[in-house]
Length: 90
Image (cartoon, rainbow, N blue to C red; front, side):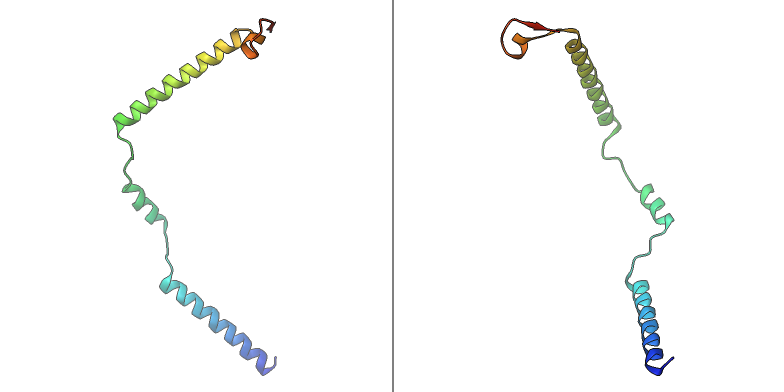
């Protein structure tokens, strides 16, 4: 290998080492235990009472929606319903 080629190779290796050192000094290393630590400090955004309230609301609206869907499936669609005339389509 010629002298210029060796110098380029050495310069590239030195630059890579310098970049790795810079990453170690300035970078952030995150480990699995960091996630467990953060998880242990989390607090719920809703209290248990608020969560129950939202569960009841969801249940109420879900039952209403299913009831409305069932009623719509049971009743025939009429033109009067759709366009204001009295003819029925089933």
